[in-house]
Image (cartoon, rainbow, N blue to C red; front, side, top):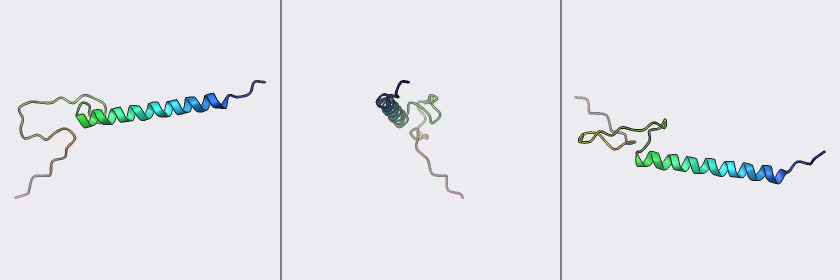
Length: 65
């Protein structure tokens, strides 16, 4: 019977972990730069509308009169 190669399994697990971390960092940087929405779809940016804030920012509610 062949013995399990634990070193290979550990290396594959480490590589998968590293790949996942890099993907998360890339997705985070894309969200920060405003390229993608939270769900991964592209955000359409309308030019010329001065009342809108940058993507990802939260505007405070309007004061009640």
